[in-house]
Length: 137
Image (cartoon, rainbow, N blue to C red):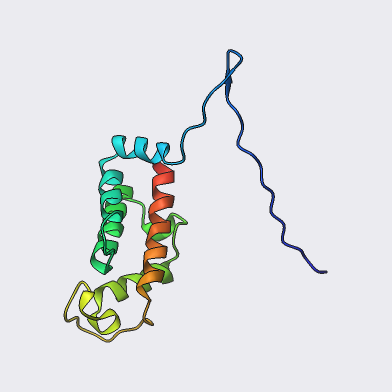
């Protein structure tokens, strides 16, 4: 049996109070509100706004999230699976995988992961940050 992927677009509802349609919040309003309440979100957004967003900055984002969600382990949230997180961590740490922008100059042991392009790492971490912010707001 063949399947055909389908996608439905459902417009967001209009909130009506006392017969008056209420303005829809701007997409970033919830994130700004969350940053005002959660200092960790504010710090993560500051890091995301920096350029370049290198391995050190990406790893800081993971550290912020891990500390924020303790005692839950990051890979148990559903935002990232262990192999992805392990590959990211090894790449962020190992100079022989990512060059001089790695977090460490020398590490014991041999590399076990395949190189992870910085752009893919940025996409992965941005997705984790977005899921984390959504969980708090």
